[in-house]
Image (tube, rainbow, N blue to C red):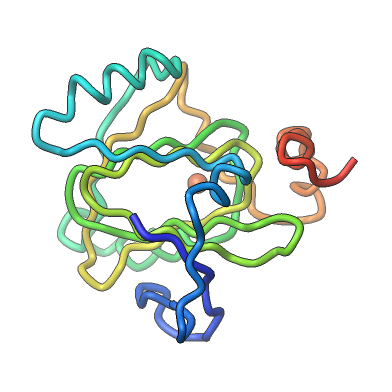
Length: 180
Ligand SMILES: [Fe+2]
C-alpha cells in the first residue's frame, strides 16, 4: 500500500497521479480519517483474515473480479461508475487477492483527494460516510474479497447537496471531529 495526495491533473484516471515531488500520506493520517489498514500475506491469508473478520464483526464475504476480460463490453462503463465520487451507509472492506488498483478518499475539511494504491495482501476499510472512488491502474485487473457485516449495503450515494445531509455523512464528519 502507498498513500499520497492526488495531483488533480486531468487525464487517464488509471495513471498514478502522484505530485512531483510526491506528497506522501501516513497511516496515522488515514486513521484520523477513519480509514483502517492491515497487511496480510496472501499465502495462507485465510486464518488472519478470519481473525480480523471475527474481531471486527465482518460475518460475510464474497469475491469480486474486475478486469477487461471479466466485464467485456461493460468494462468502460463500470470503470467510470466506480470513479464517481460517492459514499455508502456502511463500511467498504476489501482484501486484495491479486492485481492492483487505486482507492481515492476525500480528506475533510481540506477536500483534497488522497490516493491509496493497493496490492495483494492489503486489507482496507473505508468508513461509512466518507466520499471515495475507485479505479483500476494500467494493469487493468484486480481480484478482491469484499467483507461485510450483515447484508451488503453497497448503494453508492453520489456526492450532492442531499448526500451532504445524509445522517451517515454527518455522523462520519462528527466522528473525525469535523463539523457540528
Ligand atoms: Fe464505494
